[in-house]
Length: 419
Image 1 (cartoon, helix red, strand yellow):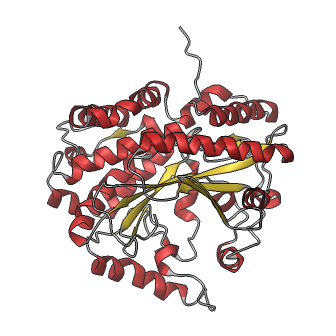
Image 2 (cartoon, rainbow, N blue to C red):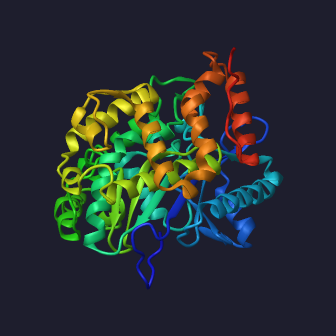
Image 3 (tube, helix red, strand yellow):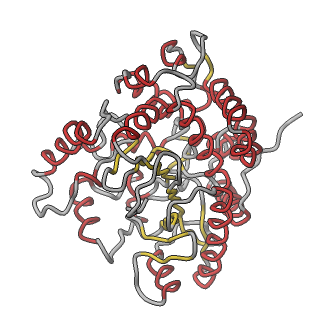
């Protein structure tokens, strides 16, 4: 989310980023032409191109393009339309390359060793530094697409409740957003394999990602001391040219940008269409509102949570997704539950119901999409249901064709329900 002369307050507007693959229209294999797409749109080689509410930009690898809000927005319905319009425009520009966009968080048969091409233009030195330190020819760097949600805060007084609530909510999110079950042509055993890689991508410098769940930091000073100073210290041995900044190297599941006055939630797998992403985002925003307003649990209870139990739950949800049974009674109390254990889907349904009771108008446009996620499953579950145990490339190509059409039409992947 861009820095503004006038800082935003809690929930005034949001910054949203969506990462999409570029693939061949016939083979559905990844196609490394993001630089050509941006050049065609802008009329010159560039890293970004702005089209109304949406700005396109490069990513680490050449087969991925990012679409993000040009400015923070409050109207998610209008943003949904704008994202879709830009997707249609991009697909039109890609026609001459016999290419199109593809949603979901992971290409099911991409080979990172042979199919990874790093962005060679602006900021290439930064990408090359990452590659030198971590080695970017792997799924964790080149084949994992995500959705990022930026939420504003004005000062430490607003940061504290927002960060406290987001830390506690974070482990539940893959049970809504998981969309990366297949890599290398087979089921990985994880509903959210992207996050399994995300945890380990930068293991050579453990302080960069930490335990994914951020430390208990509730002010700019605390955050700098506990997180940024440690990252800066650990970077010294690897980044001799001083190209990497601890502020944007920080890769926790939530990162704080005090220069912009925002936190960024980074653990969401991207969905098959922007409408699904924005439905999930709308729900997250309004659950966080309930939490920061103290409607579910006292703020001091949220702030008391250490990262370790939250990380343990996150690991379980990354693997099991909607099949997770939450057995931590203290955790359930953070959402107003009195049970000693509860299926994660039941908890999410409870939260949907509470949001609907307090914010009926705001959540109404997104309820049909959320209902489908609850009834038919996350995109990961629907992908596995569609593949039905047949992992031949022909069958996976059919899956990708369906997903690319879902994106073009801004509709969800549906699975046939047996009677």
